Length: 261
Image (cartoon, rainbow, N blue to C red):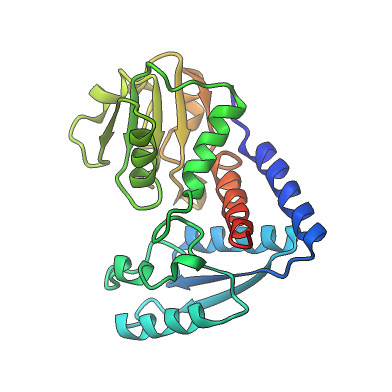
């Protein structure tokens, strides 16, 4: 079964749009993009289109790959201070010369909609939770494996599972023998950005796979999972396009709404 995140995202966005119109809200999202990362540009463009669709203002701030840390900090501070901006998103990843934690910590808590510096729920976690609930997939008494330890996926997903009191294992993309762990998994949640990391012979029949990884391979957008070959072994699986991505953006905008309450 293909887990259709796009369908659920449309439902959430409809509710967001209706509330904005009903309350006549004027909201604006500021997005900071540093460098020329292709996947980041794709996601920023998608955020822009969805904002326009539901009636949220959108402003993009682009900076060169070689911007200095100090200069970027000044720019983030300037953007965050703007009264017309309700929410600030720094598109990740940032260039290697930038201290990402320091930049994220400059976002005021009241303008954080990704859960990096406030207690607001991570849109990625909400997306995973929403998909599982929509398709009645239980995590209880399951062998759960999270692949990746990054800020966007691995860390918030692990915290969410821990808070739910569930048993799970977190492994890094550099793990020497990933397949020995993934073969035993009932549920795999992956977000490494390594193209086709998970192959057919690395999973068991009937596995549930939530693929949150996105990257480019030969000018094609692919996920962590070799979807075409793994699909036949999976009970449920998210596609790279139309899976978690649309839901992530939908919940991001839903989080913006919560800032008005």
